[in-house]
Image (cartoon, rainbow, N blue to C red; front, side):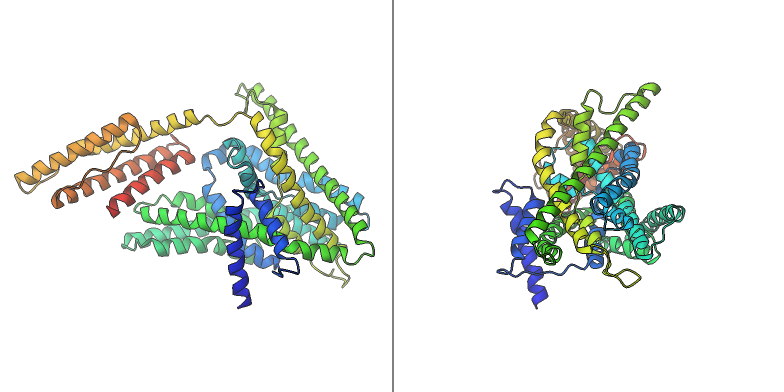
Length: 544
């Protein structure tokens, strides 16, 4: 019963923090960490022992799955070079640079263990950045940070495992590690794609047999990220990349026909889970802080003096992480700009300050849940039976860097963002209206070509009236490119005819939308928005 009470209390707190954030000028992640730390004090006594493996399995796969599902694939392809450079090359650059720096700070800690700490500090948390910026980050930069966060979780944790293994055994081969890394990464991607594809075929088979109830479809989708993660980890591959690949693949399969109610329910369920799991992650981080501080400081005769030393080390490690990230990002902008000019291509982010762009991307490298889960999984003993060197201190430093990165980003990012040009909302609205016009024209063409076979003269008249009314409505929508009001209730026979024609017209629009996306005439963001409008219209039609 105690476990149940704890879970219910945490869910209540997560809900309460969302409301509290409306009145307290703190980013939601920081507020949740602070409340978690307050709940863990002895007076309140809420204690949750964090199991890193369980944490990784329960929270990380679904969150990465939904991030991969929502990630605009067109933008991901366009930004693939900077994303891959940030997610893989920057990770190894950070491990080498920060690892040696940490070893210089802590000479008593083996170099491999320092590399392990640097590796676990490499993954970034785009969710925390979104909570800090409140959606004000330009879409291209936001997509870049999201894509990086999707990929560097895997690269950072895989490198972390190699570094821990080297610490435990004292043996490390860069050639073997490189080959194994490639196999682990690509193998994880393959597992995720394969499982997602098989689930898509299963859902199509169910639909073909009339099993269109959205509940089992959504339940299968909820189980998919866990299945992808467990299957990949069981095979010795990257479960994180498997979950990401499953989500990115599923966003394509989500366009299956006759899935309106499933899509609507799926979006609602995943929105709820995403909010809940993100809140629980930061709340759990706060709940662990007292135990982390007690474990690291309790062994020292002068804990306050050691705390000041640890704070200085946290600041120094965070500074080197930011410096390495800024140098890498700024160097990329300079080199890519020069290459594009040589090719005669337009420079990405033309006319914008490279310093400001690099600063936003640098501060956007906030550390979060994956870092905490990874560092808490450090083993207690080496293979020789000795204690893992400075384990408690390494956990304390990682937790400190997480908090400091959140604090600095929450203060600095809102002050830098006004210096960047925001997305052109008017241009986006014009693009949306243009695409809506195309699919509305397809519905009008269908109605014009529809030859309704009526059984009697009254039926023929009714058919003509319904078609005329629908075509008038769609033409009005075409002119205004916005939704109109529902027609008034008609006679039963007319309502039935109108329902069928409206349903077919909506499905015709959806097919045209799929064709446009297949031919790359619109991107995923616009597809999602227009498809949502069509789904809502169809759901309203079913319920009318």
